[in-house]
Length: 110
Image (tube, rainbow, N blue to C red; front, side, top):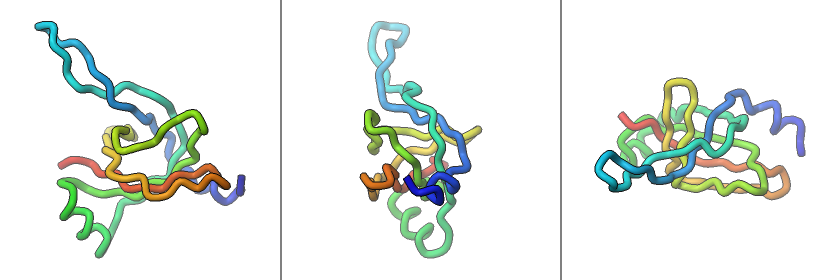
């Protein structure tokens, strides 16, 4: 694994996957459960790319890059919790098997 890839990961985040929980009347409600903590690089989109993604999602878009473990499926059902922000994964654009990195777009709902 390239050292330069590891050095870019500057945010320790909690990645959560979709699950269900029981509500007070016996039904089920969608929720997210913590799946894995990992290092990630999060960068807010700016300029033209920000304008493009704001037309698709109602929120502030972010680029993300992470080193993903082989036993973890990173997809659009995941959320990324970083401090007080909850980012919803919009798309996973690239998974590189050589460096074991995943890149994608996530957004914070507004």
